[in-house]
Image (cartoon, rainbow, N blue to C red; front, side, top):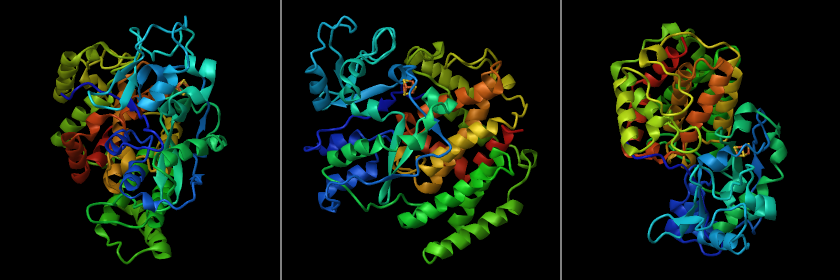
Length: 468
Ligand code: SF4
């Protein structure tokens, strides 16, 4: 069983003095694009945009959001701040504020680190979260006083060729519920944040390499975006249930990996993708019942990963089985075995056995709308591969993303008696809390588990199995 989860908000170093290792080391969770940072740390001469921010494009049209002040992010995430941000907060003169506990408010992230984590109160929640559930920094000094990761959440900025794309984290209940203004109406708020990222690295950028498609397969950004668009078209096609659309996406990936892309580019690549996408209609089994059931290795690795994805280690929704490292180890082992009662790794899980959790009762078609929104946001923003997802190559990242569907479907059953719509939303929130952000999933053996599931075609089988 791996060590306890430490999800992090990412802190940023001083704009004019990026400590290189700290800078790169802090770029986790997709809040900041690591490729972007690495290129600048290595070669600041790449900057030739004259200090202008790159545009932010493709804000999710299907997605709404506004902060409704629930405070979940303040309770469930660890916010990492730079030394400069720490000093700026300390200089605000908050000592003695009746709403705040006595210091220290920060803890160092390691002996020599220049990064600090905001402390949490004994009952959970950021040290600056008041009993009324408001951020004291925001309340007294406005949003600019907050650490950068708090200002950016729940957006994720991903560097894509000559622009940024905005993804979203479904840990935020307003994102899952699709509450608020259309996400593209936040277009005006994001450039200052992306400019902050660009300044932090020294200047702006207009060309960095895309993540590889697979081992030894590299195509330019423009072609990579064409592949993303083909996947998005498949996921948008409502003539199929969402599960088959994802199986089609995986099949497209397999066919593309067999093809050589070296001589196919631009319009020819679009033609190729159209032909292959059309062929998927016959290639991919129509009903989940027509797909073979997952093998024992698929089920074993799936449950091992599920033991991580189902967990809540921080905040008010922790389960008793994540109380300390020993209970976490024990709970992980029980997931691997898959027998007996499901350990309460989050407070929502029903008191049922693994066998009951495996029972087959298909979900109503209306949950597809929520799932479709989730996968479209992740695909469009490229939040599933490269720096936002542990530097996974494109196709490996797609498999990791598709693997979240059986996780969500399994959790939806295990959250009964919640109504299916509610259970799916909760399951998405639980899973997305880990996807691309939980360092455990970036560990070598967990990456190997995911890769094995993808290579053996077990991801398709798991999707179909939990969709029956
Ligand atoms: S979780 Fe979302 S809605 Fe709740 S306080 Fe954070 S940003 Fe606002």
